[in-house]
Length: 312
Ligand SMILES: NC(=O)c1ccc[n+]([C@@H]2O[C@H](COP(=O)([O-])OP(=O)(O)OC[C@H]3O[C@@H](n4cnc5c(N)ncnc54)[C@H](O)[C@@H]3O)[C@@H](O)[C@H]2O)c1
Image (tube, rainbow, N blue to C red; front, side, top):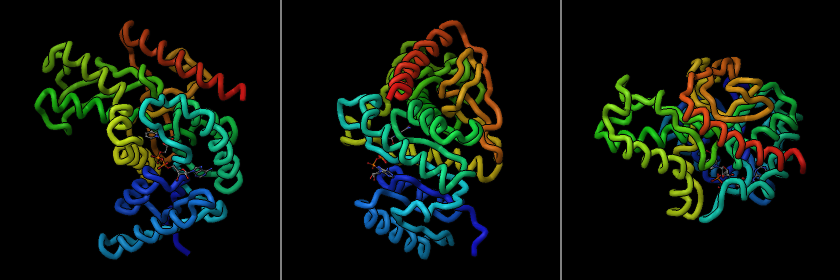
């Protein structure tokens, strides 16, 4: 019997596979790659490929592919990518009809088999899927969080670094709001190693980068015919690692709001501290009036899609 942590990845597709790879490389714990019965052999094959990688890369984690929820029992962390990704021309919200029953199925099984897990939802439309997962399981808000902001901020940071001709390591940026085309890159919290970005780049260049960031997911869907998976997986692993290692990292994540920023009963991207207790704190930034207006627009979009979830 191992004392290693257990990480259950629900969905063994593109993101699920990369999540498993990173969890193994970082030695975060043993990995279970779960998918539906028609994809069981695919999950088993991926798991075997990754486990054989342990001999070459030098990690001890076990990787199991399965379609049985009992294999996920007692997981410390669950990362949910179950569902379908976008195809060119689709919005994230177009996925709701197919992904809503899937997230409900996942939530019911997670509640039965992994009642104490810290849960990171990735499936789209993200803010609605994570809302439904929490509602359906009744898990505390500290233990259910959505991944979007780390990815969106990463995209923003990369584009800024390239435009400014500086290392991406020195760019700090945060993106708030829903995971949609009206997400809010917060310029007042965006610096290049402490230097306000407005001192290094002209405003119209920054505005162009904001637009590209907002459509950053769609740009990749247009090129590949399916969604991104390397950076989404890295983003969720950063969140899982912060929880498992009690790092108390300040990361933009979709968190359940109970009045913060003036919103409640809603999941939306805000800066949170993730540590061993899960979402330990939500940080309220002081926003400019323009940023507040953008956040309001983004919240309105999230509310619309959450209403669809509540009605169905
Ligand atoms: N939050 C974000 O920032 C972000 C970024 C990229 C993609 N996504 C979303 O993540 C999701 C997964 O993307 P992907 O590229 O890995 O897709 P994918 O199609 O490669 O993998 C999804 C997997 O989920 C499985 N699945 C379906 N129903 C299931 C169920 N009931 N239980 C368990 N597994 C089930 C499918 O069989 C498939 O293998 C999509 O909804 C996509 O839009 C979110």
